[in-house]
Length: 537
Image (cartoon, rainbow, N blue to C red; front, side, top):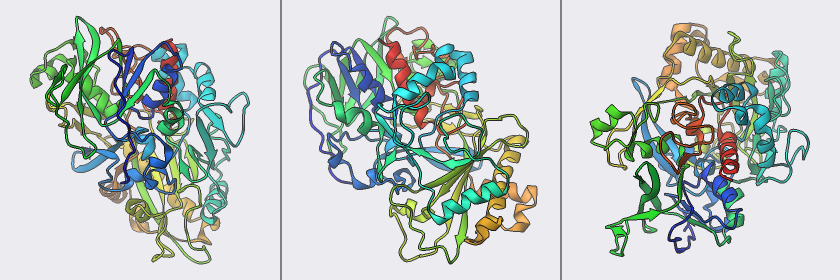
């Protein structure tokens, strides 16, 4: 990885706000809060913080790649997990300016009206679709549609929809229509679920993460300091109020920096502030609350952590979405299947599962125009394999909280235990079978048969037998990396992220959603920051 070109800015002695994390939510929140010149804001990011676009490693900008798919990539934090009791897995989160928006696929799709209805039941009108729409418009510059009643043209996040001219994308569109699925040309407009291009924060081939979009343009603000290599260990809480954080600093080579200056305890530093906002993500934020004494009393006592606030709903459950990669074999006359110049993504089909529980669509079939091995190897094409298999990423995006998490140690370096509990119920398994079989049906249409020899796997004998298909799915199971709801609105925080029972402490990331959205949460992470920034005045 290229040098980060970070600067060593002096840290304000007592900032008004410390934001923990410069990811999808933290970058946006800090930029909005620092618009007030009378408010000092300090952002603490555990990963590198480049000071200009040219200092970003090329693979983190290349929208034809998915850095988080590369095993061992230095810009991710890895968490061991179990997707099912006997399916171990490693989930990843971004550890770099921009957080997971730096290493994900660039998918930037709004939540559905059905999601907002659930969230507003817990958080009030601010979380209704009508309440959120002004913020959704304000955060974006829609390069395709411009400003109208649904879209914005002056926001930090530039949005462009994927190009469907690639032969495989065109075949996907035609196949969806042949099977009777509707067209959904604007997936950010609450149209009925169907086939359409994917709104993305990748523009002209560059992945514009939230750090680039929100923070890089305003780093010269005198009231804003963004410091990388700073891992928060614990929040300092005194007399029921958050008064600062304990942070570990790292040198550029990743080793702790130890100096004996006043206010430091070895390589750890206490930073005081007026208010703390956790934007460390749906895995790290609840862990930090636990380490700070906020969580289920019995669990904290088991770890020997003094209980500051008995909070039974903090860091115990979560929601995410199971995913399967289904590869298919191209054949001539498909030209060399390089991805388009701007993105690895093709089209997406959203549809409701057959039980009709979620009419806004709880199944997603997302097209990759790059071979999976190209994504995991970090190369935009495979010149030695001119007809390498392409893939659909097939997921069940139900808004359920089946996951369980548990902090395992008072040591911040020890990751929490994560049990996703995927495919636990007959309905879970039925929905995933339905998504896989719909993908196979798309490939069997006349539109796709001109380009494809069909699925690499599973074969027909597995595909048409429920028990065999369940077994195959289990052995190929992955996750969408859409973790939400670990510090939910209502039982854990108020509608604007204030932690119940603790003054001057908020959470502003996807932890606070009562349920995960029916579509990927990247855009919602930014929305959360926008809503809470306005609430903070």
